[in-house]
Length: 472
Image 1 (tube, rainbow, N blue to C red):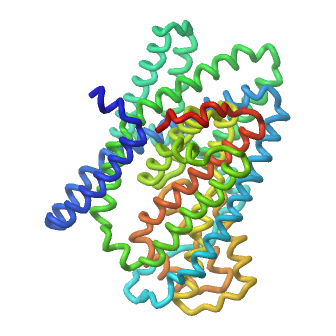
Image 2: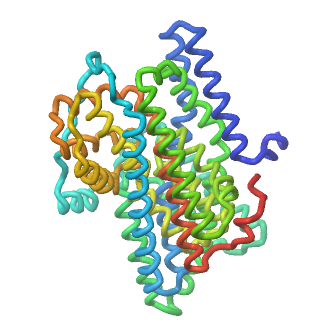
Image 3: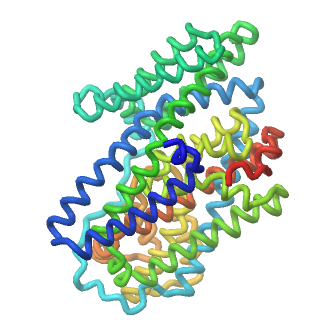
């Protein structure tokens, strides 16, 4: 199997993606529909296990890398500067995503002539919990809920991940890293984090930052803590590397299921909508992100996109920027030379608040709705759609199709009736996964772009690593 591991991971993931599409379509076209779907459902279990393993490591990954990142900065004031630059950049790229989305919706007119008569309405609501209700909900949520449910799959995967963490710690010790106490503490914290997989990511981010700042204020007394988290962040990334060896198989299984159950014929009903979304996403990545890297940072954008191919492939197959976070951190740190301090602080925040793909998509679907039902969209409506889409996209759940249910808020801008909103959501929902996959790629690419930009501005990037061709 040495030849297999000798192939760059992104190439193996791409191979899994291509073979998955071919397998899914072959099953759909050669087998009885019920038997074919049953087979694909069985295959999909491999992909579900892959995603579950990634999601289980998100909490310890964010905590350890974010704390290590804050401590690596050495100055709480610098953390504030990085945070401000990060948020401004995310808002700026979202603005351009809105423009591109509305432009695509105007040019392609995906809703013109679409018959929604057979669509099954899906109830959606614009009501949302108040600010304090959300805060209380995050704090009172039981982070161990999933673990305490005693789900056999969760327990089995938790055990496997803990064993992997032990192996990673032991191997580092045997390689000459004489830190047995740190290894034991790392495994204990990792196990606790995996068990707390139901926790709210925003709470983890906030707690990690506060903890890191407190340790910084301890000065010399916090040095042992800083050394431990530097060690722990390396080890938790080592665990994710083990998981990523499953990526080609997980991607194969997930894409095979989507291709086999949805099929290429699905695109015929939403052909122009799909074209508008995919082209808009490609343009946003090429023009906005590529432009920032090439002209703003004076770095080779080919190396940038090559360096995050693993993350893009996983994002496309899982439709979840949260599930892709471990891969994004690994790619940005190892392939693009971004320091731990920036990658550990910028990327978790991006996976939570940066949803450029969602903002772009909501603008297109808003115009799709107007065109399908004949609503008049005046120039000021474009501005309102852009602003509303940007606001509701921030903090959208990093899970498949979450953005579709934010649509009702955007459609209120030009007084779309609840009945029409329900019809549009019902029409798009069956094949929204195919659109969501591309939106997630945009979100993850945006996270990486902002991380590289902030690192460049702060002098926290190794340009030799970025410019190297080792990731080919």
